[in-house]
Image (tube, rainbow over all chains, first blue to last red; front, side):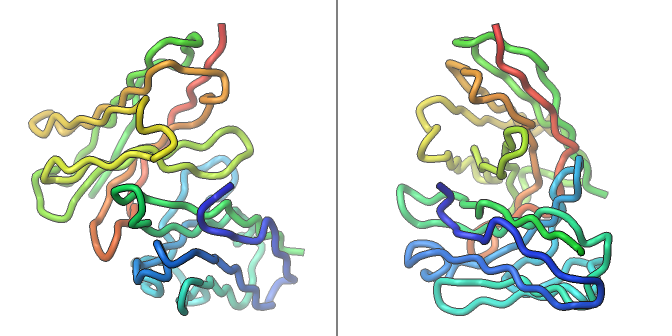
Length: 112
Length: 121
């Protein structure tokens, strides 16, 4: 049971827009901690996709965007492409129990 | 250019202690705001954060695994070591180390390739 809740799967056709939600609580996202997103292509290590809620690292296409509101955050992908098919994880920090890192359970994106 | 690489045994027996080493380059673990974290991923399952060590020797551990984990750093060798005691088959996973940035929490911007550790007798 992950501290951050994500939908297990989402899907969309090429060119469409999809969103992935990440719901936390008052001790993590709701407490003001930043949310970060990672993309994991099959058989590879995770890659930082969004940090600080909405900042894209250099090289990440602007088709990917992040937002945060209250205890939740979202990752949006526009102009869906076949190579976007991957697992996506949100991550934040939790102030309970001396403070620790928390991940979401991951969302499998299928491009139809 | 920041790189990290995990090393250690690929097979451990139940009850044994696992020791993994993360060897990195391109940054110093004495730089303010920098850390190294360990994250694991059982086959077909989600990422699970394990431990984090900061530039100032502050350590953080997963609450559910706290009693089994120890993270240390050898700054001059550019290495971070993770030990996990009393290994069990459920600990079979790919173990990643990652460069951490402390900023309103923490995030991991560079990851190692991961090392698969199997726990079996």
